[in-house]
Image (tube, rainbow, N blue to C red; front, side, top):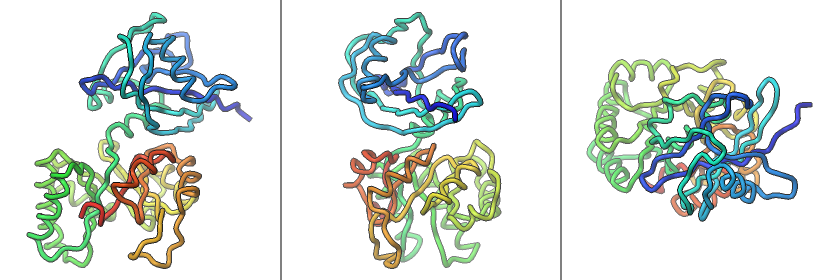
Length: 317
């Protein structure tokens, strides 16, 4: 069995919001690629202790404040790694390549221009996604829908899942157009909960919109490969280990994992509770949102057990 190498990784955020990245030596594993700095966790060290030590050695900075971002398990042909990734929000000192390595600062939107090891790519996705995810709920009419969505966007929501049932196709597309206009105004991403075929129609209707596809577990189970181009975000709803495994096999960029708590909308569903949620999150190598009976006040708890954040309807709708 290949030995699992435990690595502490720091996503260092500057005062201007840019991210520090460093270039790996040509002689190292995955040499010549850019990476988020860090290093191996030594025996007897906590992840945070290893991170503080590595960043001091590599960049000559002292970590003042950090928070968990994502945990990733990745298997290369010659080794397996477990990346414990922390976002470093405050530090002391001026970062430099203390071991002679090139470093640079890049905005989150610029990170895609750099070549990273495969294990680092989910980190970029975690940085692109926020910690609050709205799913649209019931509404009276088009005006009511727009008012509810506008209010959520004004409150800082930047991920909106358009989930609308019981409308004919003409009414659906009309309402979708309203949602596209509003989310574009706030530079938010609109995630279309639909079949792959319907999503392809939506792309033709709104070729320049910032849209993505979200598959429920039923639609996800019906496919065996990633159904859309990588320029679009792909999300999948999951409820158990098997669905998490399948979602990653078809190239999901994030997961919704539910139900965390008991909900009135699904009274018969057995809640995972945070303990089981944490176990399932550890199986995922992509950002995971907690869903089901959670809201704004659960974000800290969700992040403490490895989640990207929380998703919900009533919290913001």
